[in-house]
Image (tube, rainbow, N blue to C red; front, side, top):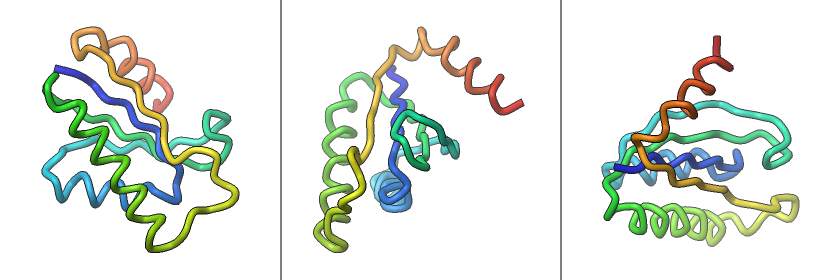
Length: 103
């Protein structure tokens, strides 16, 4: 089992949430801000089976590219999203850090 932490630029966050839910992915969404992608962003936490990580990453890329086909690529966006894949059993310190920031 893997934990995928995906930090998405706000321009893509609604499309990402809807697209992943439509494909049956379940996620936790966290509003986040700060210097990581320099602008407002949304962080998604997704738990997926080891063999589903590649399909998830392809789906995330497709969602962003489809949005750009409809709306054009934004000139002020350096990155659509950044994702990290972590072994679920090793993710407890990461999740604890998220919980502490929200308290």
